[in-house]
Length: 99
Image (cartoon, rainbow, N blue to C red):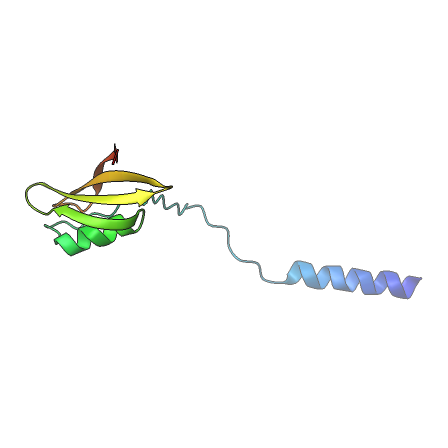
């Protein structure tokens, strides 16, 4: 009985002496909504196409001129017209397209 108690005490003492990782006070949180990223320059039509392909299927390019590029895409069996900012690469507008 004394031997088991002594072994348990030694094991407990060894566990308490082990190095533990220091606590961190900072917080690392990343929130990604999946609407493209900020590129800081004009993006190409192909890059906009790839951004839209992340969220939609059967993506087709409609227009790649001006401030926004337009694409059509399918999601959940419904068609959408997607506008992507030519400057930032963010999806700025999504409208349902009734075919």
